[in-house]
Length: 120
Length: 108
Image (cartoon, rainbow over all chains, first blue to last red; front, top):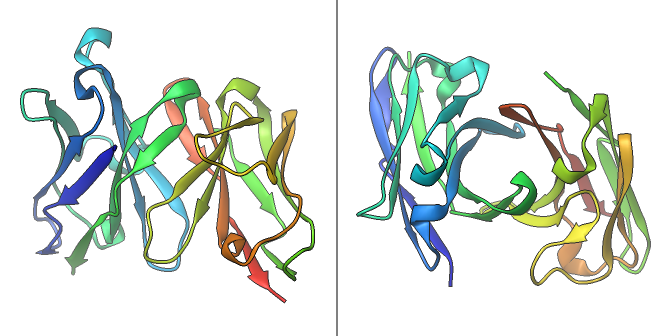
């Protein structure tokens, strides 16, 4: 069974940093492209960024609002995905989900999310 | 950036009825990269349809997707009580993804 479990969400002050983790199991994490998506309260889903597998160059892409502030990385030995968030702003307050990018670039499996709150 | 506009914003229907949800793109989207998701409060989003018309694993056949170019549709042929949720379309283009703003399917 595929499982994705996010952790690391917390209350942080504006300008601060936070690192989220996503523990994966039930699939070949080494070959998986992974992504982060967020949802602010009362709003829709917003794509944050994606990391390819090591075999695909481990390259990353980011949404414009987080580019230069957020960094996605992975540790295949630990089956874990990370999201390093720096220079946090109040508008980064959201529930953050990790997901496995499967066939046709769709997000086939999702975690339940971890809550990040940025206070001004 | 490709903007996806979903309509209607809210759809009020009764169990047993047919639901038709629309997703319109600001520019042509590859059908290979158009997906639909269901999201219920407190739960993880769930992939329903990928490549515009392929059902994801375990998705009942009352869910179907169609469309091409800039116009895509999610149809739920006969609503079950568990189908009332928010639905999002999503596209992948170049190096990034965008979601529509969502359609809230509510019980009438």
